Length: 187
Length: 257
Image 1 (cartoon, rainbow over the protein chains, first blue to last red):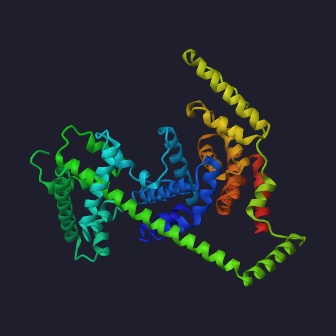
Image 2: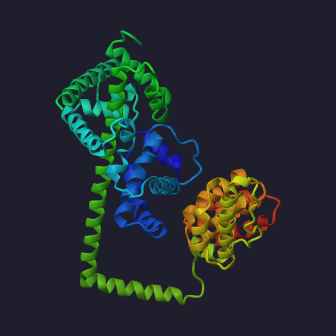
């Protein structure tokens, strides 16, 4: 399976290709990472999950310029870099996927020195986001995570036109802002 | 930016996002001296939404894990039945028959084993210090390189890699990478070997054809025949000893699949 095929599939909205990649290379990766890096099966699985997520993000954000490699090589290379990065950074290695996906948030909340406080804040704000409910959570994720254009979103969510989606997105962000403010003021 | 409405801030943020997706946007927004409350809020929201999207994917993979493990349980149940035991015996008999059949088809792994031979060490771990301040560190590096190449000569590829990985990146030569790629491949770690040879073929003129040859073999080892063929085709038209070898392996691949 080559990167170009996966890239085109995801940009055509066929993101089920990710499940195929996951199933196809998961066991190979676990076997390889356990032998190569002497890590547990559980850690290897978590790093693999993180790496497939990264592959997806690199594709939707158009961060892939080299299409010659196979998907297997690409995902394994992401994982390899991540394992080296974790080992260099931490005396105590953390491979849990739930932690790995918080990386960017941790960086953003850097001014809060206390790790427990950061974790607590992330969990609470994530709860707020969940309370926002549909269609807002869906709209915001489509735009800010899946990098869909307003035009694509209008099609996916059956909105009349691009302006309606844009207005709805703005209302959702305003609502979320009020909810965040209430949550943080209530500390 | 003073007096900007929230709606205007959102539009400005979305425009910046379109331009500097991810890493760069943080830099552009966080390091602005006139960072306002809206920017803080939008950045936090963006990261949280991204986190929520990642959780969705993670949950999806966890469901797949569950269905895969259920599939394995189902398989083990099937294998415990008499029918599948008999079928397994029949399959075993078929496999034995195949082994004693004079002509049989080889997979890409077999072709790999037939053609792969680690490149003979012609580099040796020489390293000359140019900086007196770093003399001690240079001594350590020289020692590590010597150990790595010594292990390579003794075909102790695991030790060779362990020593190679301890050498700082900026002290590794292209030749060091080339031999490390060979060591990975000899250990059966085709993925690491591919990563090295892919890079070398772009930057190294001295080892270019050699790197292409081992890249093709690494692709064979990882079962990616299509990429292996592409590499050997490229090498076939080169003016090097690998041209004939590539022709030979391509003929072999054509016959054996």
